[in-house]
Image 1 (tube, rainbow, N blue to C red):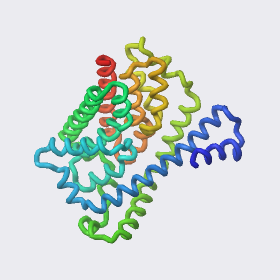
Image 2: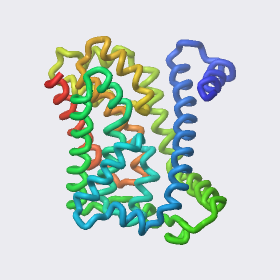
Image 3: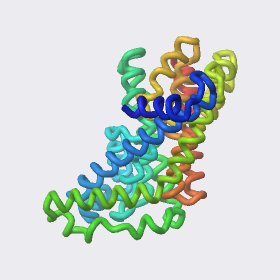
Image 4: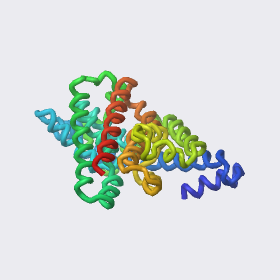
Amino acid sequence: MLKDFAEYLTYSVIKLEHGSRLADVLEFFVYDTLKIFLLLSVIIFVVSIIRSYFPPEKTKKMLSHKKEFIGNVLAALLGIVTPFCSCSAVPLFIGFVEAGVPLGVTFSFLISSPMVNEIAVVLLWGLFGWKITAIYISTGLLVSIIAGLIIGRLRLEKWVEEYVYRIRTGQGQEVSKQAFRERLQYARWNTGDILKKVWLYIIAATGIGGFIHGYVPQDFLVRYAGPQNPFAVPVAVALGVPLYSNAAGVIPIVYALMEKGLSTGTVLAFMMAVTALSLPEMIILRKVLKVPLLAVFAGIMTVTIIVVGYLFNAIL
């Protein structure tokens, strides 16, 4: 339906020529903007209802273990089983910070959620079996835990936007005693509140993605990140950063690149950059994180993805 509407607006209302770059940009922009707003609205709404059953103190108790690394392990595991991209993880990130969960623990979740995605797991399992898949999951888990520990030790709370700490979920413990109708009302309010804060960032981010989609040749990645290039992995990561897609949306690209002979590690690095490090998602996260903390997050993800890419190129 969204795709049909984007095509109708592009070709029937605005009457752009089929196959033109401008038409591709506009169709991509309209479709992805609507898709992201719909996806984000549903996720925030559902997460808000779930959060209403877990008041701040309960959430903090679950993830704020006396032994710091236990909290990081639990948060990283939670991230692995929640198939969110970075921007979709924002409402949970806000909930964790609001609940008083240590920032390092929260980042273990924020890193593992997009980094270890379900599509990569299925793809690797189908192509190479459970051992390679286990290495991928273990690597993502280890990086999430270590990065969270490092961020926690650096005490970077001052680099989270102040409004995140001011958000309230409806007076803590009382929220868990509300009727379901009240939970729905709270979820609707919270969804609107967060969307009002990030809508401009989403539009800007999708516009960047649309421009790349329409004006960058399809064989660009193959041309500059082929097997003969020793710097193929960082090139693939750099080319994946301006794009936006969830893990499912990048599957056709992944298969096409592998059929054209790109190394598995290079393709995996590209996919992880698109889903966990894309510029549009960084723009959306900027609404929550100040620039220094966003730079720390992006730096950790960049180095990790490149290392994982070279690792898989070496063992496969």
